[in-house]
Image (cartoon, rainbow, N blue to C red; front, side, top):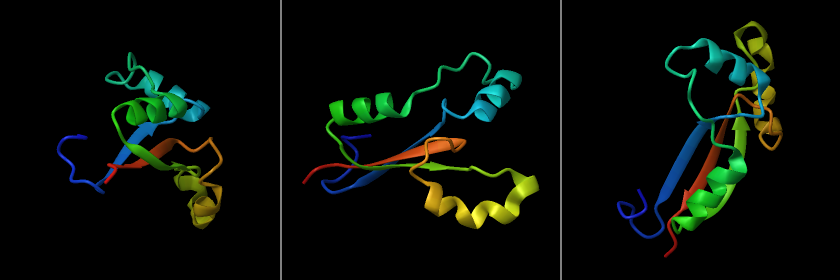
Length: 95
């Protein structure tokens, strides 16, 4: 990915959040995810930095399931709380 981006290019790395107990429970129940190895946010940032990327930010998303969808407008204010169902590490190729 690093080599395919132009200098200044942006890459978004998305992953299921191992800090979220509902995510872990759901992955255990889905056959194709059952044996998946989750990547912790700090490990994702470390790997992306070691590939040469500059980490711009880490956001946590998908806090509220459908039955409480009315609360979803609050999600942007919670993006730093490491309990969302997934996380995003936004990185940039230097230059």
